[in-house]
Structures are given as C-alpha cells and as structure tokens.
Image 1 (cartoon, rainbow, N blue to C red):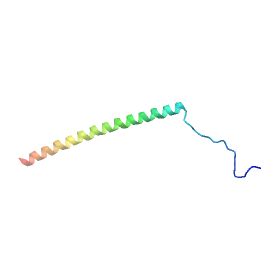
Image 2 (cartoon, helix red, strand yellow; image 1 turned 90 degrees about the vertical axis):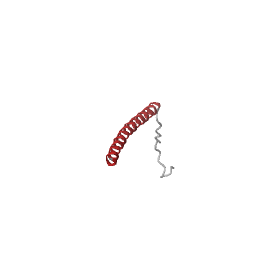
Image 3 (cartoon, rainbow, N blue to C red; image 1 turned 180 degrees about the horizontal axis):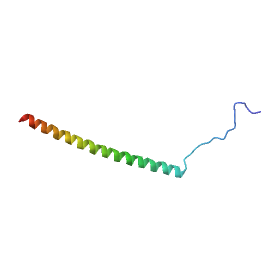
Image 4 (tube, helix red, strand yellow; image 1 turned 45 degrees about the horizontal axis):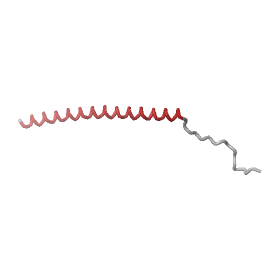
Length: 66
C-alpha cells in the first residue's frame, strides 16, 4: 500500500546544456559591451555639456568684470 500523499512524478531538473551555457555567456558579453558603449556615449555627452556650461560661465564672468 502506497501513502496517499506521495505521488510518483518524474522530477524535471533543468540543467543547461553546453549550447545554452554558451548562448547565455555570449548574450551576457553582448549586454556588457552594449552597456559599456552606452556609458561611454553618455560620458561624452556629459563632458561636452559641462564644457559648454563652463565656457558660458567664463563669458558671464568676463562681462561682469568689465
């Protein structure tokens, strides 16, 4: 007699295959590269903006000094 609470179900343990692991690693590398490119682009834009603001500040200070 089997216990009523036990059900014989096959356990599905999903282990990634080599192909899946390779795809995951490749996707992770692509994500990192894209994020890095976005960070560099944002850094460039922010640096240019900061330079423009500094130049405007310098002009303002020169006009006040005169």
